[in-house]
Length: 190
Image 1: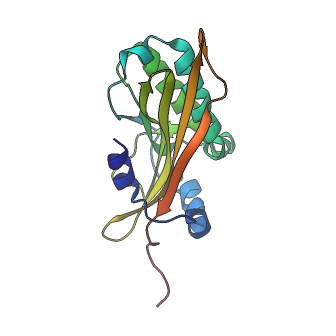
Image 2 (image 1 turned 90 degrees about the vertical axis):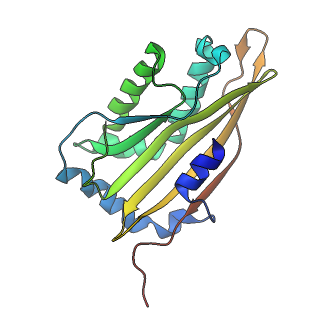
Image 3 (image 1 turned 180 degrees about the horizontal axis):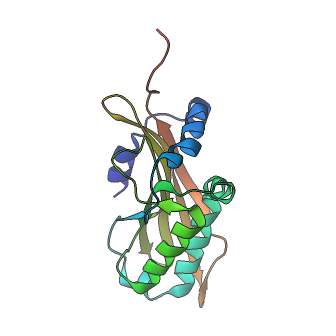
């Protein structure tokens, strides 16, 4: 799972924020050229049954996820048109996670990416697993932009963990690590 996300984000080196500042202008302008439709949900992996049954754990995971989406939520609050966003969730079938998807679509002003999009955001909650009394998850935030013949990307994976204490889960979940990276910009000086 992590290998898939890392290859999708083309993680190579830290410091990606410094090199993609002009891309944010494209992110803000690209949605003006497209028609709004519903966002696309990406199912990362099956959800362990113990997670699906534990509504407190789901709430803690979503709280951590939304906390990491602060910049994306701020852009959406100031924007008036939907943006192309792939929302990553561990389950896209159950009623509980369909509700999560609808809430994320609304909060982020998301729509499904189209072939004509030049910039696509990917956000959400990746893999979730429980080992003993500890839950581990991956939060995904990335941006991809179209160059002449390929896609370039930059993003971040944030790893979180929370311990079950008696009848509930600790709050907030701890950030236990992460990784950031990007590819070269579409064009650069000779």
